[in-house]
Length: 194
Image (tube, rainbow, N blue to C red):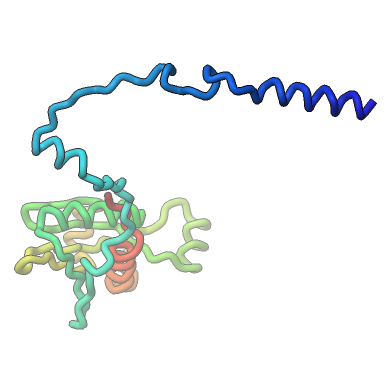
């Protein structure tokens, strides 16, 4: 049986390997049409451009475009003009979940409610219905090509105008530096920008 199958296979291969010129000559096969173009010098430049358009990635944080001064109290410097820094700061406050109670852009002031995350604060907020708030004033001012941001605890009159008087914690510690460092870290490392 194997002998018959091998014989038929050899016979088929010999039949396909004949000297018929129809099967070896490819001149008669159909070719694609040739498109005549008149290239100008500007077209050549476009055809040779191998540039790649990169997709914009979301940048996280301002990195070196924000820094702290060594002064007492410390100050945040943002390497942006006032208008751009104002918007960047608002975005950082929102992303840090720091509540903006009021803002006066013409004076360069943000009034924010801030209570640092602590174990005592978490326990007291569970025991009481409303958490007492402390108001801080962020002063935003142009400083040459940069913008300076300083933070201080609001005075009693500023606290009263920004929140309902029964919700103010007048005896709270001044955590302006904690707020400043939290805001700085958000600006430097975590701020989502395009």
